[in-house]
Length: 87
Figure (cartoon, rainbow, N blue to C red):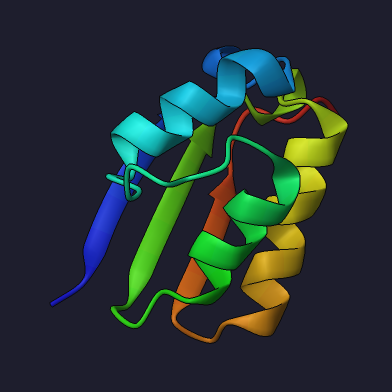
């Protein structure tokens, strides 16, 4: 079964906004550390095929965007689609 999530890039403008939003939306464990390393760990450890559709991707904090793309590169179970990027 594929897990599909739509993430609102406007909720990912800063790490302070992004981490609680991601933790809730992606149902991260209660011990989630609310930082880039914890996000990377959770995404890298996904064992179910997961697709993340990020809308308003041009609004996403650069460090969050980097973690999403790095995690995708390391975990074949994760696919990240970025929509609404400025050209």
